[in-house]
Amino acid sequence: MTIIQYKHHGAFVSVQAKLKGRHKEFCLCYTCANFAPNMPLNCPIAQATYEHNVKYNIVTPMWECPGYYKE
Image 1 (tube, rainbow, N blue to C red):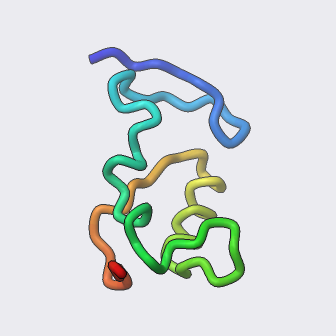
Image 2: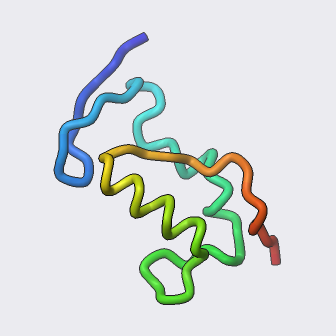
């Protein structure tokens, strides 16, 4: 397994090379009708997760969610 480092949210982070930048493929939020990034009505779960990610310089794909809604 190859681990690489890059700068994300202002900090150097480590990631498996084969997974870098692929979180959107797996994150449930990106197919949810409640997801409105950078908007006042963004899903509160998605917003809290994003803020947590920025605070700790991590990436968290959402695998399961009680607020998921598909139009």
